[in-house]
Structures are given as structure tokens and as C-alpha cells.
Image (tube, rainbow, N blue to C red; front, side, top):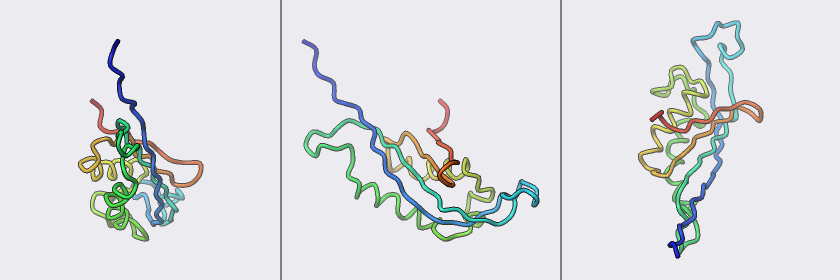
Length: 128
């Protein structure tokens, strides 16, 4: 009889932050070319096997400790002044978050950034 394989699960955790930005590569006549703000939501996907002793993939508190310092750099800040976010589109912001989180979260499989309830993007890491 083949040995049972451990289940592969995906944990999801959502965070919120408010920030201002403008997209400087757009004309000022475009709404996003002017200074504006968003109540962003970030959803992280962490994939891994179910740890049999704890019964989870990762402790949410451990994940929060990794994510919080990064979000503090964004919370109530002007994103254009954050190094690496001079053109802070949602796409660039999702990639920026990935680059800073992936070294600390080996099971990271997605960073989804929502500008509002209807608009967002999902980054799943660099193409192989």
C-alpha cells in the first residue's frame, strides 16, 4: 500500500493599510495622475503541508510579526516617497511586497493587493 502523502494547503491572511499616491506616468487629467488615497487590502497566500502536531501550516501570529513592520512603512504614508515605489501602481506595489516578504516566507505563493472592493491584482512571483 502506498504511503499517505501529507495534505498541501494554502493559508490566507488579509491586512489593511491606508495610503496616498499618485501615478506620475499618467497625465494629470487622469484621476490616478493626481494625488489620491486608498484603503488598501493585502491578502497573502502561504502554501505548505499541514503540520501534524499544531494542525496548521503557520501560526498567524508568526506571520503577523513578519508582515507588520513592512506595512508600517506604508500605513498613512505617501507611497511615491517609499524607496522602490516611485510609480506605485497596484502591480508594482504587489511586486514590492513580494520581494520583501518572500525571503521570510518560503511558502509564499501569492500577494493580492486590492485598491477597493472591485479593483486589485495578484502577483504569484517571478516567472520561471
